[in-house]
Image (cartoon, helix red, strand yellow):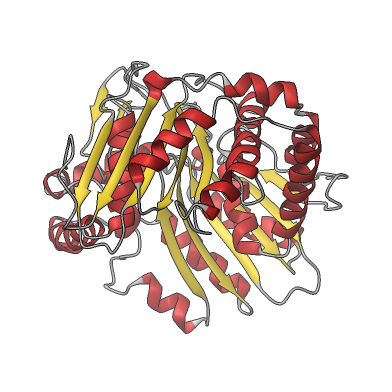
Length: 435
């Protein structure tokens, strides 16, 4: 087994990556002299993966919404009754996990006992333990978490926008599922999902810190051999065809907030991209929103001066191979006026080359800064990796994008793909739709 050192000339880093016999890829970024080591063990499995073919057969599997998040929670419980959180605490390490639409990630950060922490991380992810009793107990815990999210205005604002934008794509559903959906989860469901999506061929380990790559890869490889697993083929996921029109033009919710919360989104019809094509689309749309509504843009300044937005107003683009959307929002005293101005101004707002050059310099600076923040670096690596992207390609693709590319992307925003989500204070008048 030969480790491969990659030259990231544009970044000045030399990561090491190795695909093990099990199909697991290990990616190590040596950071000599750094006191903290940060590691993630991630799987290409998220909340939208609830309909798929069982590997090696033509049997279709449907599992309850929220099961990926539920599975993430259950991985911390082991047969002897000890929680893995306790073991990491004994080692003086921090651990956490999170589930998104397309990925689930387990992590630790530590300044000592890295070998023991790494072994604990592998044990955390590679030893499932689901029983009727511990699954039932977890349902109550996650039900409380779901109800907590339902009481958070910002979460309701975001989740309602997704429900308004999408008719069939599972991104319209909350990552944690619903109280009703998680009540139907069984240990058998969890094992089917684990065996399908937690196979090493569908996963990656990322480590950044003052570590010896050869030693780490050798240690992980030795532990992996005990599992006697071989690489598997790609997982066939099943997604419904999403119509171009939105599900609802507007959703509003009355909640105890001091001022209205506004969020407007555009559903991107240009989906099915992967790798460099997806990276180029992602960066082009992100640059578009920075030019239009970034903190240094003329429109942002005018809206701020008019008192329609504050400094926390944002606009961004997010995507995967199966979806893409632009979203902008924040607190505003007059949602209707803000919406009207945005809809009128966005298609005709002038875009300038000098602004694009300035924003690109800023983006490059933020990218370089990633390598000083291991947590953000690992998050970025995993987000790109499972979409077929290489972190080192980001500054190169960014530099290639022209103002003409951004102008073309501007016209992909369609009124038929636009929706609005509002959270209004109790004294607001009821609108078209409350949820």
